[in-house]
Length: 283
Image (cartoon, rainbow, N blue to C red; front, side, top):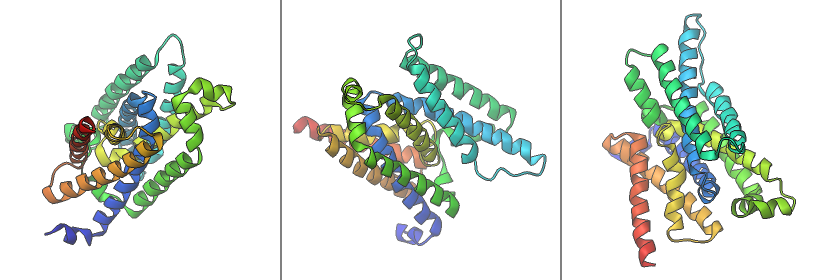
């Protein structure tokens, strides 16, 4: 069966469309995060998302005993991740606990408790496989329902539109927060906004690359672009294009070769970064 035969199938079309939108929103978000050296906030929140997924799994197991079905994990995962993003921001502003310390505390704690919960409330007989699937992604992106696709696209579009609307404010806060405050910009609001949007993108990207590989989706397209472009606007545009192309190409290779979706997408991003790095040396 050729890839064009696969393209005729609804689930492949759903996967490609969703992948493009998620990768675009991830890249847009990645630009201010990388430039402000907040890259690892994505890593910390990805572990929180794993913890939230574990809670959703446990609730499914418990509700099943009462003949109640939790149909959408996002109902549980999204609020927990957003609240954690806000807490992480508040904690980072605490002089007693620095930003990197806060991320380490939340990251390791969430990962540990998530694994513990999944062992206490196993969704299947193979807990290790369930954990591996959640951390590194699986074929879940290829089993999305139409409602999942609509929700993912709607949230991705919301992130993209908000980024475009507040582009100038994000630009100012990213490069000089003190100047932004002096000119009347509410920097705390935009930092909070950035944390919340990061949480949304993290949850969306879980189905695509798994919770441990989400940071790659946010970081690699941006640092690849920065090897060639030095202008904020050009980095934003090029990283969006790179992200969409790499994610789509990784998904296609995964479908054809039968490789893990998340790992394949990240591998493509790594190869593209190496290419851009070499080009940047010669430029």
